[in-house]
Image (tube, rainbow, N blue to C red; front, side, top):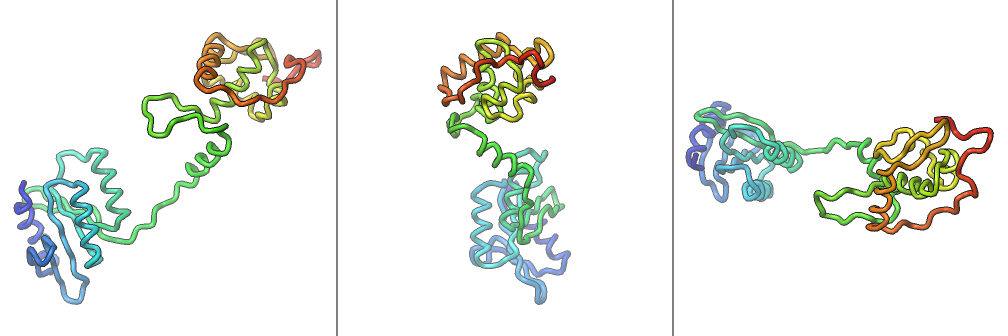
Amino acid sequence: MKEADLYPPVKAYLEAQGFTVKAEIGAADVMALRGDDPPVIVELKTSLNLPLILQGVARQGLFDHVYLAVPQPAKWTHRYKDLTALLRRLGLGLLTVSGSRVFAHLDPAPYQPRRMKARADRMLREFHRRDGDPNVGGTTRTPRMTAYRQEALRLAALMAPGPASPRALAAATGIGRAGTILRDNHYGWFLRRERGVYALTEAGAAALAAAFAAHPPSPLPRAPLSLTPGPAGGEGA
């Protein structure tokens, strides 16, 4: 469709709602008035893209009620969903045209984003727990060094000489969830030898060597003389 092909159905859609519609008024593609209601501006484009969004933002400097009108896509891709979310945040409306039909997806309105508190809290915890800044911003397809992985590596480093108990490892590293990390064994690095005693697997040793080659570890707290449980046994696991 050409931009001009969008005008007749958009004009008919607005007129059906009682608006008087005229094209090319000043910088606007379409302007509509209805009684004492605020003016409505519609900008036409053959695709929903950044130039159209910027055009709509510019029209908001004139009037509050601004719509963008584009052909109805054959399929709503993630790109269109993301752009729709952007329009909602910007307070722009969205119309799509299919043949002679017009579909209203968004109406212009002030936007207050819904805060994702749980996700925000996880990000803050990750920031505070992560040791240093081991990753490079903007990289892709590169394994991320998370705080959880750092803690697992610190435990693995103390287990390299031999088996150890979760309780002793927690005391030596200050990692309160040491027992949970060993039991969950998310990376396959740890092996439960017996109750309260874990050893490092070959995969754990290899991961430890690779990680420390790329990111030399920060100094670890001094380990106790014995990391293995005494006669009374260590932490149950």
